[in-house]
Image 1 (cartoon, rainbow, N blue to C red):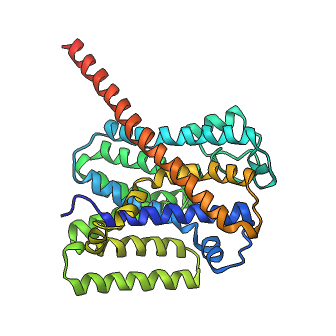
Image 2: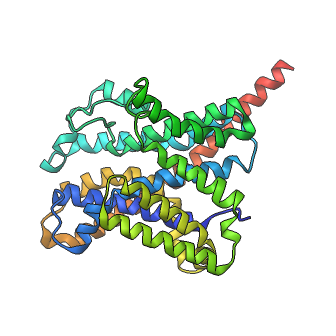
Image 3: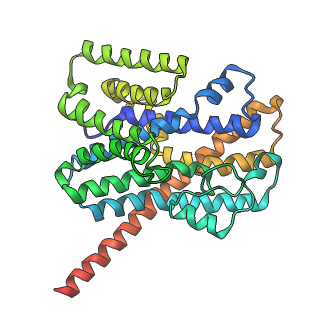
Length: 351
């Protein structure tokens, strides 16, 4: 069985840049698309979030079934992975907002210390603008869901380390039903968006571990991949309630069973797409302050579309690379090393 799914890197890159251009159309065009590309990102760019949720479930199942973990170690690993870049992106956004003020971003102004504290602690709360339940860095609402999902995984580890993923599947499917039918537990436990994480877990548990779909014959795998593509396209065309979940599950499953193609592509020019997949978390976070800076400094009329796109892409890539290299990698390595050394010193002194 493979040690890395290159197909998921392609999907991570796709999901991140779908969200970038969805917000591009929102900020610069007020969701009033006038060409085919703008229509695609206005209508379907938000699917990037759903893809991320399913991917998160798949990746957690993939990593947790391959190595033993404790709840404490898992939580610490997730905190060091998620928090530093998120906090930094939030601070960068606030710094940028303090320097610029234009109509497209007026709703982001006026953050209080309470807003910042709740955002940093992943506590859902009303955005100061009245926009809804959003943190200071508005895209961070998805991280509130991510951290809740990680909490459920930690509970699963506490209950039974070897069956943690399966226990989490049960918890995720049960919570929204319990919250809606018995006792309201809050906005996140009440949301069926949690099911996307559970489907990601199941794609790995059933599709990869039990059925071993990536190892099946060519006809079966690509027949299934074709069916997934048809399902995703049909759902996007019909746009029924919950279509976003169907699309994201179909895409993840389809990409996984076509892993051999993506592994082959990744040896050539596809390496850059894999690289963009590595940067996807930072891309998701830092494109927001980039949009603010670009909007403040450039002509945002339609006659300047090409230069706007180039500026957003270029600056988002640079910001993502810097965050990935120095925060996600080097800082995380340093802080986990410090924690490990402190733990070793504590153990030695106890002995």
